[in-house]
Length: 347
Image 1 (tube, rainbow, N blue to C red):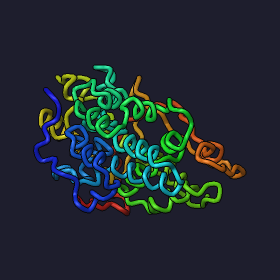
Image 2 (cartoon, rainbow, N blue to C red):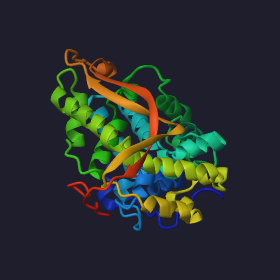
Image 3 (cartoon, one colour):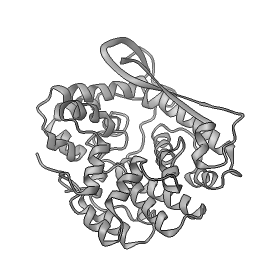
Image 4 (cartoon, helix red, strand yellow):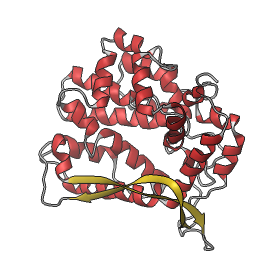
């Protein structure tokens, strides 16, 4: 199978098209097939096709990797503007933010484990190859960048954190960065969790050391809640494991890593049916651990006495760690649905 079919992917909705600055560079990148492919990849991956999230409907724009990429680019541009970053560095940062997820496979992180184990394909390596024009997607990306005097290698180095310390690296690589701001707030919308606005959080980052630590502390606690109760919770874990187990044994080829969700699910309807049986709003309990199946458990805490004075110092206050814990297969228990057992809107 080749790269993605873009039939039905469509353009960015007009309501979102102004999220990045009006610059011919960004307009051309957003029109490129490699970036448009992200419209057909769900932000959460397998959970996007669960019973809870309207698995029989076309993926809403806001739940796509493209929407996330545009949101990160918006946050990067806003942070650069409020922080007084020079125009050239700001343009490079927004470009890197817009392209940072270019190599995500169909079903995102849910399928990535299988593509790594079977073909050695991880999304960071695929993103770097696409930006350099060295992979099956993104052949037009380096031409667009060079036409607008952006070196593809500079974008790659910034995303990898190999650039010299500066506002671009600080915006992308710290505990609270433009990627996590959009990602966590987007996940909170999935799970109907109250959350702050992106504008408020980006402003707090841009105005360090005089920023609002209350807003940043609430965001860090929200991130802990999103991961502990949802992303790494039993229902999402079950969906990730269903996806990974299926793809580890299914007849798939390397090219499927560069398609869309619909490309993959159309070719493997059994996987679609399995995902659609899982309701995230049901109550779940941990079953005995599956031998050899592990996933990292993330822990987050705040060092109350620390008051970072710059983006590069955020790790002084906002701490995180990963402890390798046994992955558990979730099973439903005989109990009514959660009190909030709503089906989320599809639009």
